[in-house]
Amino acid sequence: MATHSPPVDSLPYDLLLDIFEMNADMFSDPRALNTARFTSQVCRSWRNIMLATPSIWAKLIDIDCTSRVPHIVWKEARTRVPHNIWREELIRRGGTSLLWIKADLFSYSFRHVVNFFFDLIREHWGRIQKLVAKVYCRDVDPTLYAPLLLPAPHLETFEFDYGTGIRPDVFMPPQESPYLTVFSGQAPMLRRLDFERHRPDSSAPWLHQLHFINLTWGYTTLSVLSATHNLRELKIFWPEDEHMVLSLFPVALPNLKRLGIFGLELPEVTSILDHLKIPRGCSLDIYADSDMAEDYNFWPVVNTLSSVAQRYFQSHPPNKLFFEYSEDKVILKDSTRPGEFSLAICFFEPEPSPIPTRHFLAKLTLAEFSGVKELALYIEDVEPISFLSFTSCFPLVQTIHTSEQDLRYLTNIQGLDNPESARGGCQNVFPHLTTVILVTAHRQKPWHRIGKVTTDFVLSRIEHGHPLSVLDLTQALCVEPTALDLLRDIAGLEILTKADDVGLVSV
Image (cartoon, rainbow, N blue to C red; front, side, top):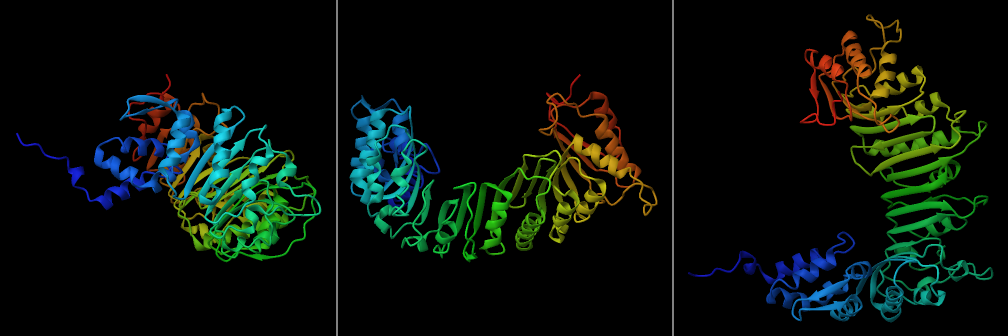
């Protein structure tokens, strides 16, 4: 009987190599190193390809992966080899190719692993192309960080978090020298910089070529940003000093695609947004805190946030939106493009609420929401007149994701007397609504049962001439059997439940 080679043997060399290289990205796949090792053991031809391509191994210097595996089995020797020898073999296989290094080192990490990491960057600093490391070790000799002060001719990505263990004076420069010259000012290929708690020199020649930078909000932030002419992505977090008085001036970032602001209070967020000139369609991710007093002037904050939101949604009109509003938080997200726009504000002094509800909602009542057809809506303690004004900008909503607690509020709104309505009640609350997707909200008790509140809402929609077509209960944890029977008896209403009703209906 003739034997046939498997189809994979007929693949061209270049195609095989492309596949092997595609699978060797440890930053997107934590198993990439093991995949490469297994690939090199499939057959002799594959092994020859892998061992003849040092650039693959050089991009797989995953310190964590080589530390997690207790022993490596070498197929050809059938012997167990300690992982410290495997790490050295990995470097040997990389030859003279540019290195990609990834490491998460903590106080409980083995000392030989920590030593290997620092020996690696000391001996091969000039070859490193990507370095992504967290070094949370309290007893590291500060002199081990010295290579970071040397020129980095090939470095493209530098993400380095040294935690709180290193002495502050190692990377915080003395008073007479306000900046520490990282990379000796020479990093001609650098595109991505995430160096927590470090203030770059605003005159560093590599700033203009950066595509990404992560900065603390402080005295030199705007000066640094004014030199980043090609920046695509910016993250700003935590103030350097809670009581600092900054010299503010406008900074244009014409190429910015994404802006993230985290861990700052609203006045600081407002200052950043007011002084950064960013493109209209720039993606935004803002998480702000506030412990504002009652007499805090909220108007500048409201005006700035609404202006930023409007500019974004003018460029990206949404058809799906997430909105949550309560006395202690406001969250607005673009669900049409997940991850492209998110505004979250948490208030630490909710009683009495510092939020001027009516004016805040009025500022978020944007004409750009008129095309929204699917809305996730979670509301609490909003006065009806403000809510009705806000919902007027959603004339086309057909589907809402909400909780039973929110349905109670909507039912009450629909029952309010409206002299302009021939049937009574407020018929302008989502007049085109056909589908309700009910979830168990985080603020509800885990044993909460979907029941009378939901049936009352469904019946009120019928009463006011806007019946539902679909009630989706597949995400609800628990439904009262009597309520489910009543809902199933309503003509024209389709009820969606979990396939087997297990865990959905409580008896």
